[in-house]
Length: 313
Length: 245
Image (cartoon, rainbow over all chains, first blue to last red; front, top):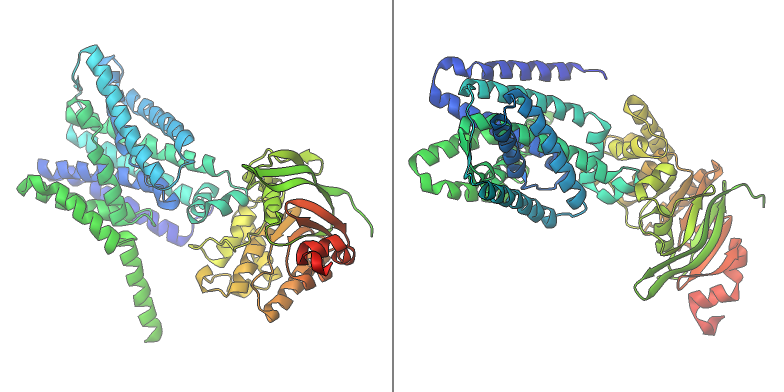
């Protein structure tokens, strides 16, 4: 694998941005840090979501299922004497396994059937966990660790770096090319010799494992979790909206959606806590009517116009 | 006519859709370096037969084998990987990609798999073969109709198939394009490729095919050289009805 000058530029730029982001806790502002965690969390979730859904156009609403699986893995693991750090890879494996099972069962479905199934799956997992807790007599679980907000933030940044590197590597691989072909025309993909189910399931597993690890990392922040919190469907919708708002055509696309959306969401929920759903709906309308390719599409058509103007000047 | 080894053979290949028998008990062989025309009136089951060979559909009964190995139970992807590549009746390109990337899809995932610079170089060679190398970086949306067909053909060729299935590749071309198209397929034929051609254009059938299999309502009604089958009374009846036979 050879890296071009452009690749090195992107890598350097990403490393610098990551280093700057890592300095946020030094400001000592607890509110800023809390927003930082939220942004980092959604950045990882939306980017890993877009790794799968971007090229294939399969809209998954199962993020909450994987996220909740992660939080519960960590909570139950710690309760049973496992080290916190051990619960992270366990969550990743469980997330990947769940994704593989869902993939095997559903990736033959397309379009709206897949969307509904993933939403139903998240709900099913939540109900099963609720049922399990009812039987055991507990309502929720306590997660008591000595992990602070700063630790969570840094962990998320490391995970973000891993996700970006993975996404970048996939984009340059046969698998990435196969997914682009699948997204364009699945029939052609099959007849060109691509094992379409395998490619889709592999990517869905990457996406599911990542969401599960995010859930694990966030678990210590909640201290107390119950199914309604860990498996909230709102999470799945927010991830989809943010990723689409940013645009899934580029690896950095979702991030461009996550930052403004999270800030706006924070501002609105602090002054008008009841109007957040309205923001969700409005963003959705904006995406559908004005930004079908997200901010990425806006930026790229802007660039193209600039180039054309230069060419004619 | 010299006959080489058999590459592809159909034995009793049958496809039923509920009560409708689209392909009924088809038997034929394709030998190496042969261009076989699969002809017949509309709705006679030619495209369905092609779909059975390429794995788009599974036969209800019968077997299809590639060099003696049965392939009819395999997925379309596996069949493509074993060396059967097809074009589609309605051209299918990858709309978000450039001409070169479209062809690269065949080079990367087909029968012979390449990657990186090697795949690009091979894709460019295939584009040159179909006369489209100058438009390698064009977006497929900018192409004329025949050029989209050329891209699809180049994508299929890039996989280095053992058997090439062309589903009405010449349909919809204007007279000048048709001449170019026939010349292009003639070149492939001269290279010694094994081709199954579903076609309606009689000129093309006469000048390109070594042998023809004629289908009517799902059944094979004749087989032989183009001259033989096109003068066969039953074939004429199938095409034109009883009065003209």
